[in-house]
Length: 369
Image (tube, rainbow, N blue to C red; front, side, top):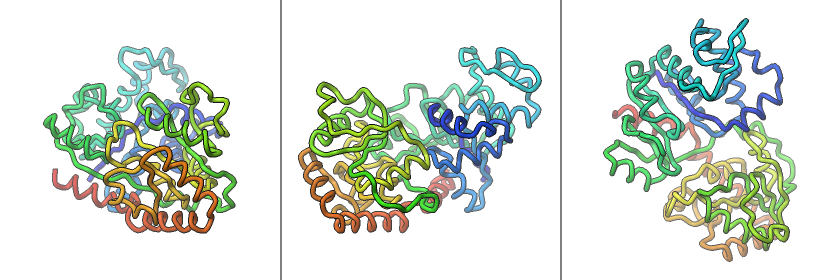
């Protein structure tokens, strides 16, 4: 199959990567995309190598990356597209404008769909790739697949032929809307391990991620933990609430890609708490990332968690803040017990929870469409 993977990456991550390598934006489209892939930022592009390994032709695009997208247009003689989407265009350079009535993001992405003509158009961000975009490119793809496991998209999504979700409750929701939807668990890219240093664990309890309006339960849990246990935090501000100065927090700038995984590896224990929309189900990437890098995971109990890991021997699970504090204190003080859980959790990941495993399941689903 010809499979096109399209996703919309965090702007902060893109600025971080290009800021570290001043010459990256001058490289070819393929070289820029390959460099981004080597950062292992969570996106639909995780499917690229596993699908190629299964013999499929794959084209990956980060649609909101202006540097790579401009380069693609230049390499494919689509300067006319850049002229339509930019305030000025001269000598191969373009200043793309975000307030253009016809967004440069969707315009260039549509040109790429037309050029590649995929059998499967796999959209990793249904908050961006909705009905309007799919109608724009409809003559040029076979089947449109969306991947979604967060609050229901705020734009139309009825044009998708299939929605993949790692949340059973969202699968049920999409089916109730008349869409075909299938459950597919998340996973870990095992190649990350070979890029990590294996030094000592400089941090105790750590959390890496976002705390937003969609994470009310997470904010409550983290405040309780940080009131009782020293905690390293890589993420955003604004969730700490009154009395933040009394929290036992050591705050760091947000970390992405390999830096995030290395920070996870440096923690003796990583705490996880799901987005509110997850309800009773375990599903987020942190479940697989922390265990995948070989760190002990402390996560909120969910009804299907036991289907993913053996609770107590491969991961630790809490039902409320008091239990989270008790487990954190005990296992931070007992290195051998904690490291045994970390080792067992990583072994479970490598046995059945990598994207290489999951790609076979995805292809099986796609082959029955």
